[in-house]
Image 1 (cartoon, chains in turn cyan, orange):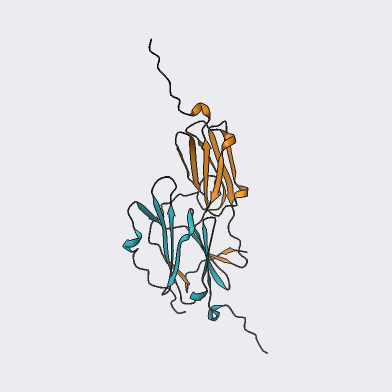
Image 2 (tube, one colour; image 1 turned 180 degrees about the horizontal axis):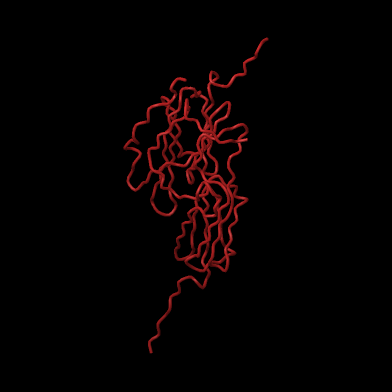
Length: 120
Length: 142
């Protein structure tokens, strides 16, 4: 089977680290169905406009910024995943509800399991 | 039905974790222990405030109680995602029942407590009971 595993991504860029801010990796659950991958990330306190989900050159980057209520304190949620080319990049969707980010990555037609009819 | 599965070969996922996860932890994955999410409490002159990170919770099922004006209990449950025909590739988020009990730094008026659940964060405003508010005492000269 061809190697679908990718090289690890580069280190977190300097722009992400800020004064008086802390960067943490959100906990995620990843599930796989016949048609898609589901990534669920815990990003409490993040509003939809402060979420940045990108898919570029086989890398899925999940970024969310959280502003704390009482003092000036920013928490950046940041995590990068290497995803094989078998994901249809233009069909990726992301939804934020109650502090949980749900990202759906549909598989391309080529990799969906296909039932092969047997003649005989 | 979700099922556990190891995908060592031809894995379509490889994740490179950039940053250490030192955020609030709930409880161990293996057991359904009843530890709790972190509950941050602070106060000012007029009220006590509490905040807890509770992403993915149904707020209708959250139970917030104040006993004797000094003890705050937050309990609830988070159910794991049920996706038909899905296999788990990675599981990090905690699930199950949780409960946190804290003693508040001041006496609060339980009838005036406000609770708001927004973006997965529970924010509580617990106004102090009159008796607990600071009082200026005039000193009389003899």
